[in-house]
Image (cartoon, rainbow, N blue to C red):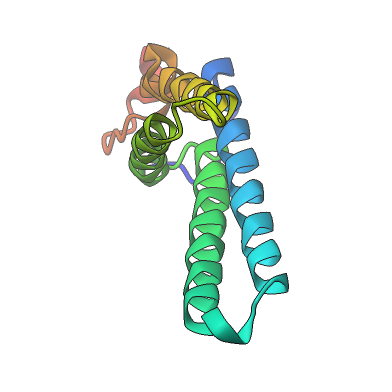
Length: 138
């Protein structure tokens, strides 16, 4: 399993798009953690701290996954796919009159990332080949 792209194995465009969007999602969640921390109040201190920690861990986790995807690390795809499936559920919960645009944005982003992660070129690039014959097939 290569830890970074070799000259023989480049990062395909669909995977680059997916990794970039996962990085954006990670940044947004990290910024939400900072915003939550900035708005802590004594009346809801426990909820505010746990929400901040949750958003921060998810944001940093997505940033690490995006970094791993750009380096063709096979471990990074599963948590990124799981995050997109969760995001689709969140998008579904936001459907309705005042938040329809939020739901559409979340759903479209998740679907684009899933398409990029599950694209045949991405799957080929992320295949875990312990024999090292991947470069011989290309």
